Length: 335
Image 1 (spheres, rainbow, N blue to C red):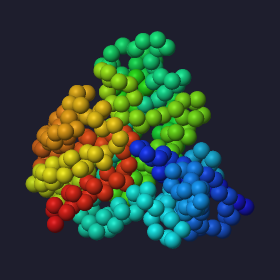
Image 2 (image 1 turned 30 degrees about the vertical axis):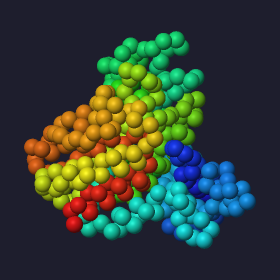
Image 3 (image 1 turned 90 degrees about the vertical axis):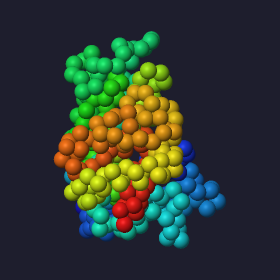
């Protein structure tokens, strides 16, 4: 008796890394918490030269495979060098150190992943020539003239739930063919693992429909919303009081330029100050303000405790990197 394990990892493509995966056949006596390391050709993934191309895959998170079913699994991996040190493209390893350092502050994340469906070279729902009706009715819309790709979205949602992904919701977004799913609340490492696997499932399931999904932050130029990955965050102190929320916003402001440049390639195209964004060159925070860098939800301001939302990360951001920067910034300011 054997089962299939789909080993998933993040490659070294620049400026935006891509997901890769391959299948390993394993004996059924191999426990899921004791999966073997594996290898791959790093010269084909922008992670090694051809004359020294071996890279190592180390399993770090395991999920039931909702596509193959049965005992088959999805395995999220970190990439290591053959000397057993993290590969330079491994952004999970430095997050692990920061998460352990500030574990006592119990940081939680909830990430809102926006994405856009494409078919035949144009966003799903866009006519062959020209453009659809302006934005306005597509967000959380219903009806064949407003919503495009719901069958893919529903299949993806079910797959994520079957896989044990910490999915907390879905909705249609502002542009035709644009959608969002939310993951969390989860800890810094878990939210990255779950988001990367949810992305892999999105791409894989869209294959079945002959559709591609992209996390391009500005898939259509002009007067159309971009795609973000709004990142909600809180420490235990924030969930118990309002002053730590303000302190967190101030701390993020002190590192604004450094952080925004790590929030995904093409940030300048999306954070223009229009379409519910703050200019990427300016930092601000405010209550119920979707035009600010950091939004404090209105109910948080009323209850004087809760969380805040960093609205700057692009849809193509690396959740491991974003979680590390936010955790380090917010938690170090609270020490």
